[in-house]
Image (cartoon, rainbow, N blue to C red):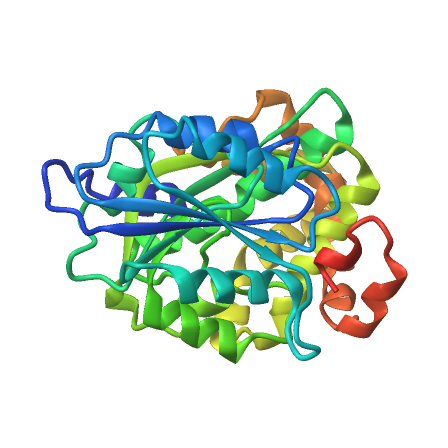
Length: 336
């Protein structure tokens, strides 16, 4: 059903596109930012556009990378350096707020600093945006050689498949900072509404919008998956901070697929000869991801049941509140 929802999304060509301000919140991103800026330089966009890189309390050479790119960039690149944040704001949200305040255009495209964009991504995202308040597309993680990295990429692909599939059926609820567009006034509303939450500048903001005002584009960005289980764990737990703010009808809708998978497990326990039923959920997910052209390897379906048992613990993580994140050093000051 989710794959069919994505197939319903119409590819738009030749439509008028608005001027946009690309906002790139960056925390110690000197190693990944050059690839993003290079991929932005490959974009051909017929309307005016600009790029704002917001260096959020960086202690590396992020600002120097931006200044070096300003000399050779085919589009305007500006730098904002943020050294402090108000106590009632999370780091990334305040960085985005500073970027929105500086943006010249009414449409903001939010892109994380570790993203790479294929040629034509910006144009493909914004075609059809005229009557919309936000535009979303796919945002995949690229798995590496480690099991942790492949598992993180597989889970992220499943999350994207569910979000994009429901959006294709006219019920959007998910966007990601790895690449989406939103009108400035709505982005400001979302940033203020959820400013104390570690995550949610994207999905919680989308949920503020009327469904008919969220457009879907058949484009995809790519980011590297976390390399270790600990990094993947912290990333997921941070994202789970938005779960208590999801409305209950949406939570129940998202429980349908896990409930069906759990029912298959119960059937196997009660009737061991029905073990082939355990292959149905991983096979269905793999076929869905193939339909969505997710960059995952076929063998990742072997991780599906271990991932399912891991996901059982997620409701606990959703209720571990912000103050506890001071104990997690890897994510550091950018999250807190």
